[in-house]
Amino acid sequence: MAEPRTATETRLDEKGLARHALERVCSTADPGRAVGVYSGDFLDHVNASDYRGHDGIRKSLALYQLLFRDGDLRIRVEDQVAEGHNRGRALRLWGITISHMADGEIVEDWSASDNLDVARQLGVRRLLLFGIDWLRARRAQG
Image 1 (cartoon, rainbow, N blue to C red):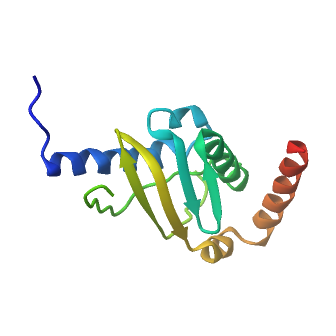
Image 2 (image 1 turned 180 degrees about the horizontal axis):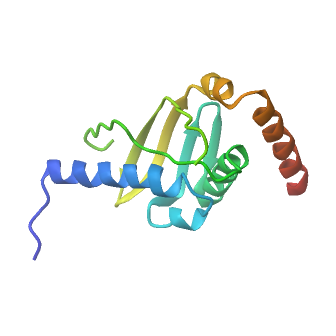
Image 3 (image 1 turned 90 degrees about the horizontal axis):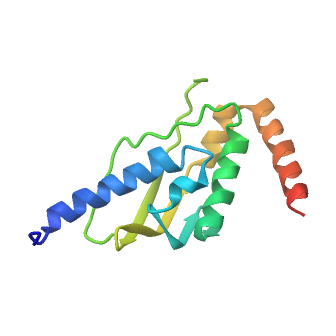
């Protein structure tokens, strides 16, 4: 029989899960990677938008892929805090994500980021291309 885990061991596992979610799930176009990492009932609060469940993850990932359609999206966690239960040119996005975990999966995230700075770094041309692609994707969804 396994020994009960300490609070420190649990926090380390949760930090690893949160890092994995951002670096290995959110930076790809494959929503299948979310299974087992994010709960099926996952609720994601990103700035002014809410995404629900694995379908919401698919929509969120599709938006990132539109913005970074040349395949240069890489997410690297530079600093991380865990508390209780709780190829192109580089682009630096400052933000914070607070994750709530239960039963070894992320059940809810609250994220905020500096989108104005991202827009400045991307430049007018890339933002216009993103806008055109976003409108096309919305029309295709019906």
